[in-house]
Length: 363
Image (cartoon, rainbow, N blue to C red; front, side, top):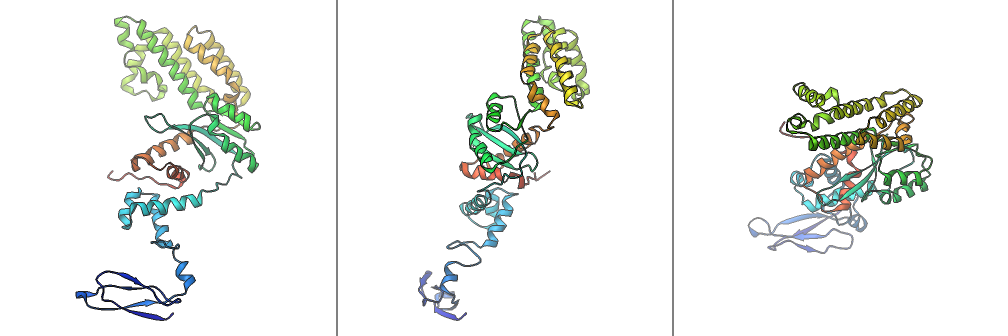
């Protein structure tokens, strides 16, 4: 590689064309506005336009881009920009380009178990539907809205890839499980047991409110303040609150019956086989139907209508629990970044969420 020499004397930098096989030369002011000789190594035209260490016309090298992407797994874009002395837009361009390249085509060949759920993005009522690979922990699909329409594009990809899905975990929303049965008829739908217990807690709360409206002044005193105690598992009730819970149950026979039926329902997932669980569920539903409590009767009818999906847990013991953990990570991601204006960039960040690490400083 030869050397060219440029004589500087201008007050501002200006590009000076070199020979066709040399590098561009710059002239600029030296110390005290005196001329200075600046060596500019000449390089071939193809190397100059497509250097091996950087993208064409980029102001950063490949190694710097790798460093920025590595930092982005721990830091926000503003923090990365501060550390690297780059502009915020430059950092975002580097990270977004890297994510778009890596997640342009997400492999689906080895996927067997899925979890489907929605996440609420804010007070405007926006929802995202998320599909998670339960074995690898990777997010496979993100779509605006909720329900079967948000899953159609992903299900088409599964068909084209000829993926054999064994089971899908979801809640008891008809919009999700009906779409799963339509597009994946060979897959088993498993209703998540956390959502079933949540439904039972909602029925308990409805009963508590109804009793509180009908109760007298003295009876209302025992019911007041017991909402979250009734929703807790018996083993999770704080020691100092157990007396208050016992008082509320002692003066309200319907509430007592519903509470212990809810606690008994949790034992369903402790059964050891599909046949044993089916027999246990049938007995619980009979007991609930005979209780005379409208909320428990409604719950029993719902359980019977969804019995197949509930009992599929004993064939494929999966749940949406990992996806609930992902939802917490998404909330942390949004909180650290104070929201995302670029939806496409936000979706790419979700695809890389299994690589991210969140650390809380100052503890």
